[in-house]
Length: 312
Image (cartoon, rainbow, N blue to C red; front, side):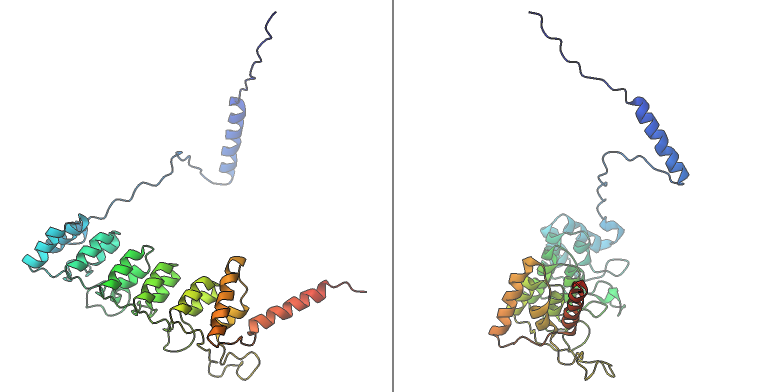
């Protein structure tokens, strides 16, 4: 019996088609005044060259920076305790302390070693001749803005002030919050940061509790409540405010409590919101009157429903 002929795979000559497509693409690019560069398939960026301490330090400072880079504890011990070199001495031409080096090079072990030989955790990031701006900030400000919480934790464990502020007057809690680093917020709180410190003033409601309640992170608000934060901080009307003595007055409002009872949150935060409500009620903080924004939403919803009603 003769075998069946084997099916042959059709072949396609794509070269003319591809040529036409390429010519059309180039024509469009020319008309648009654009130049397209063909990139290689591998677009992985080249690794960044490591910082060289010789570009920043000289003399004993360079020796210490190199010892930090290679985790050389005996060398650091010899430089500090035998040669008498102060690790807080400014060796950098721009006035930055040696403690800034392991922060810049992302070297937590190097930071640990420098603190071990007596570096000051609250040292300012530039020389003492500068009293304002980022130069006056301590190492904790930079560490609070870093994603890796080991740097801030190390500085706090060595006596760094958790209630410090940056050059803009913002507390470290806010620096950690605005950069999205919850682990740093917790490290500051556990080290004694004042949960009731406000963003710019000495009083008012604008504390770390309000920052998290405002964005609907009731899981984190619950943690802050459990660690002693005051949710009952009140608002005040500004002098000569047109809202004073009206139904929309801000005087006496408690924004954190209002958020707990009235904020609209995603489904995954509702259980935490209810947990915060239970916490407040358990601590004799009752449900407040609806805030103006809630009343406005209710009025808008009512108007929308009326507008969608069938007219007879």
